[in-house]
Image (cartoon, rainbow, N blue to C red; front, side, top):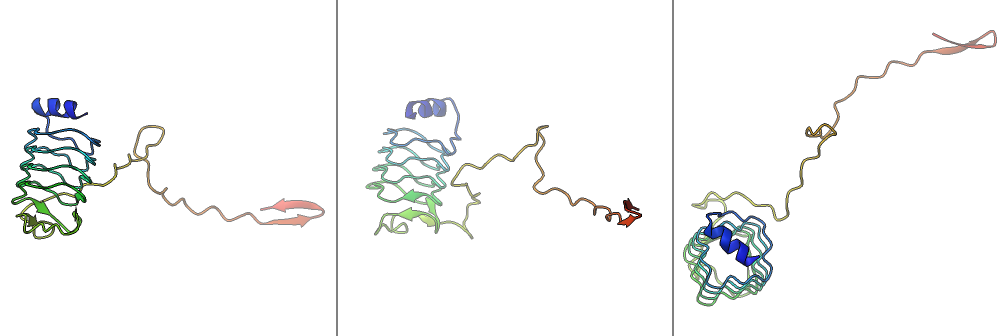
Length: 170
């Protein structure tokens, strides 16, 4: 929940990758430098929140409220900001890339954002949009081999023939 996130943040935790905060109310929250990469913040209320320098790569902020929020130097590469309320938000020096989605008519450069991606001043690792699946394990807990090694050729079948009414092989 939003309250748990704020408490853990106050306790010093900063990484909340792929957390589900659908519709969370984080109005005025101080989340400076938080890592919410891959999180679901659809419909969340972050009005007046401090997200300066936050890592918001691949975050879903569809229909979220970020009015008067502080997002300077935030990493928004691959984020969904469609139908997001950004009135009065400080987006200066926040980065976006070709995968970042904005509402029609929104101009990220006019808002003071910087284009990231290749050639960016930031080294940004990609974040999966879906949780990665664990590697399959065999019955002994070892990582399973993707393909079994080729087995040696089976021996040539023995020749069989009939001799005096009996089947003989050799």
